Image 1 (cartoon, rainbow, N blue to C red):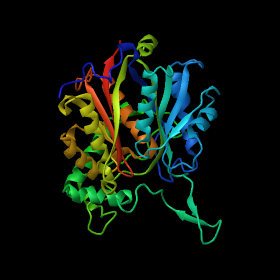
Image 2: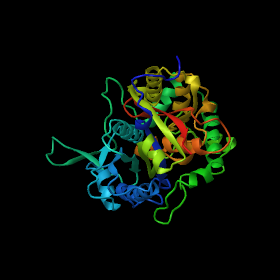
Image 3: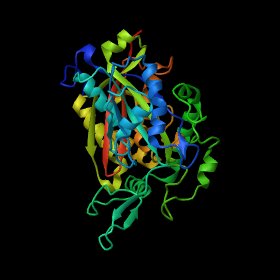
Image 4: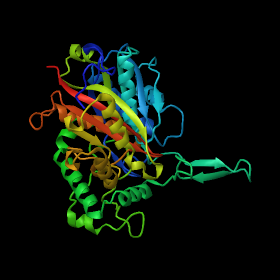
Length: 397
């Protein structure tokens, strides 16, 4: 395969969609610092920061597109936009592909820019695991009475519909990923996130007096990781140490065209080159992101070795390691600033966090040659679906 050249995914230089900036809340622990703050209020805290950070006029913003996984319905994007005081003409769109929702929201915004459906979009995701509504079916045996359940069904029993932890154990067994490898990968994520703490802090908008991630795991060591017992099965290898923590938070990106970004004076942007979604076995749903990556690379005729920067959502170390095997990339190349293992997993927002990581890395001096280099972000989601998106870093100034 060769790098992208003259393919249908191409757009003229000025029409190519780009991500110009990202903003987020701190990430709060489940029932932690944001335990009483609903999702639309978390999102409303960062929307003005993105809007004003891009120096937008009221007439500029075409839409707010937001991913959300555990909400109670309605349109959290519209509710948050109005709560934040954005122009009433901005409609708001909420999408749900579970953990892939935030990345899908940004990809959709990019495609809308390239189709000239709007000039500027704010896209990303939000999750409040702490205030997510209780869910219930109506009992047929007792009309009107509730039958509460913990989560929605994502696949029929014929395919298997495991909870996330059970699915991670399935992946670990299927791909022969022992406990030690998982712990070593997790420790690297913790270390990298700690090293990138100051760079990450520039994107954070304080909420309710909180200005830093409550979810950050400080002082983790290999010795401490080895003490965690199996979390989901008696003799399993997946533990709380090599699994992410559920989190509350919001992450958004501002998307526009390359021509407008250049005129607006942005220095470094992520140029969008396409996205792909794919299905995989629901019982091994942590691997679906890899199938999306392989589909995207084939579509772009892009060799995996041409990709300099990889971001993959870290719900579990086992799933990330399995995906590196499927894609054929060394684990060390994934998540240079750490991942959800270190800073938490606000489901609908985590895909957008991957894009924020890529943009931050592309703008940092030194290190790898990001200028013009390929970047890929990918997420595996419940039910065995995955989404991947490709970008190139472009320096405009």
